[in-house]
Image (cartoon, rainbow, N blue to C red; front, side, top):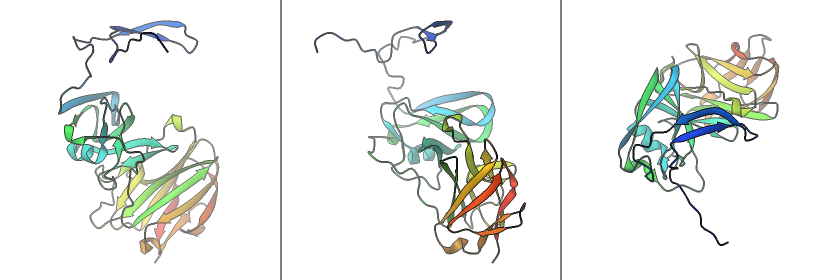
Length: 277
């Protein structure tokens, strides 16, 4: 149609006001200092260092792609060695992307928010963006590849499915290692109330690499006690001599096909993956 339109990239407002869902002003506002940058993108030259912060000490930082190009995650991880994993929310769960499993086409879209996991807990961190990691978006993106000697556990409860991964490697550490393992993140936006994880050194892990362990604690997060359907997907026959042991009932289950675990509650210590052969 006819008419004139004004676009502001970014907006020239120097103060933002907050409203509720009904459009009522909440008597709260935040000033924004543009420093003469109205009409400019936040980053117009690269490389640039972005500083992230959080209120309390921790390993997780929320990061949003501030650029108008996709960021190649493989190159992003290579440039930022202190970032141990990138967590992308997809299909109802977080996908953990690490140096070990990242694909060459894995990307962060413009304005997409992801979680970065750092190698040390703190209240601030820095990440570097370079021109080399920028590229056009892919129509379809596969974020991760299957690791050698990998076992994926898929848990289903209340109509929602989530997963975790363990992998054996002669170069791995049986204890928790921030550079090879990924800490579980359960987000309220999932609304699923279910997660499965392995445990090491008091941490719930969504990805764990191991060298010689023969007994691996398996835990669950559930909003309420209930039944869980569990399936196993092994990349090869490395896991043929393993079973899932229920310490509460004394039962052992082969890790193939689908099994149902009854009266499962949040925590670890009841279930273990055990090597029996």
